[in-house]
Amino acid sequence: MVNRLLGGVPVTLSREALTNSSILVVERAEPRNLQQRPLAGRSLEAPLRFQLLEGAGGCWLRLLPQGPVQRLNEARCVREEAQGQQAGG
Image (cartoon, rainbow, N blue to C red; front, side, top):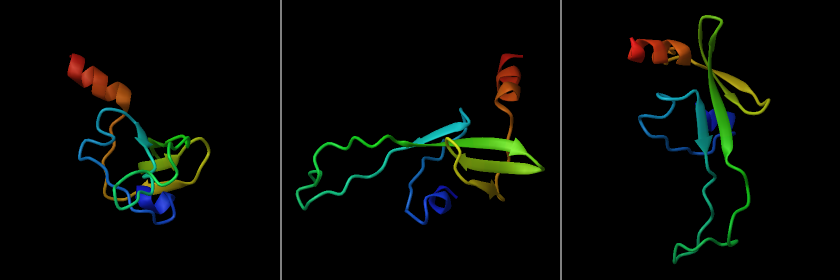
């Protein structure tokens, strides 16, 4: 789903992504030469940030700050406050 919000760019996420926080930070891959050195030197681009939302009967992923929103059809969301309460007591 992240790749759809980025226009089809391939994205690799860990299995734990969005399990401990509703914010996901994705760094852009830098183009590299054959020796695996960055082509343009140091990248100064800020990483992309996404927010997991719950509402309207489903889970949603939004590109921050005010980017597009995509429904996550195969996801189950739990509010962060509820997760903390369940763990604490």
